[in-house]
Amino acid sequence: MLKYVNAGIVFQEIPDEVTLFINLSNCPCRCPGCHSSYLWGDVGKPLTPVALDEFLAKYASDITCVCFMGGDSDPAAVNGLAGYLRQRYPQLKVAWYSGRTILSPAICRSRFDYIKIGPYIRHLGGLRQPTTNQRLYRIGTADELIDITSCFWNRNRLIG
Image 1 (spheres, rainbow, N blue to C red):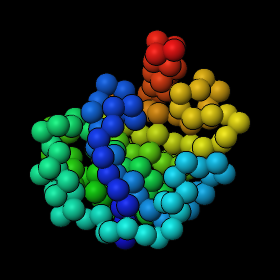
Image 2: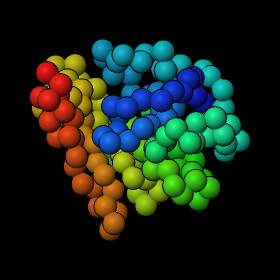
Image 3: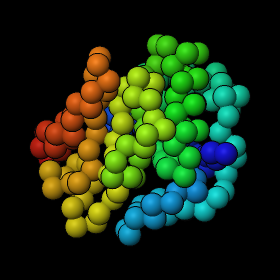
Image 4: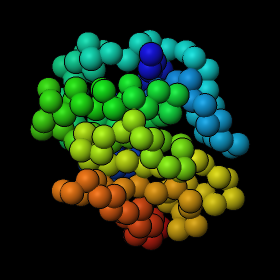
């Protein structure tokens, strides 16, 4: 069962979206230098459709996207919750940040608008660094992965 530790609204995780992020615990990736090592343990509250409904009762009018941060211990559960969001809240986009190097076969791409894959590797940097190994993809109309990682680099140059 997926568990979440916290959630909030962010503006930088998914380009051009106001995103409700949900941090999932029990991360098996354990990337050296991870800024969220508190998510490695099996802690938090169960993330269920009811919990999602509670978040969205509070935030739906303020957001355009929901992003699951983690969940690599149970990609099938992430996929199921994405399907629930897609059906119940079709006006919202759905995203997933995975720390794996390849997309799990348990994931149905059509349930997502964005997927980030790749572990954090300190010397390569995160998504804002052109040297990063991580990739953020927009899911195309034919379920193809369209690499939009460079959106972060261009913003980095504009911001300074």
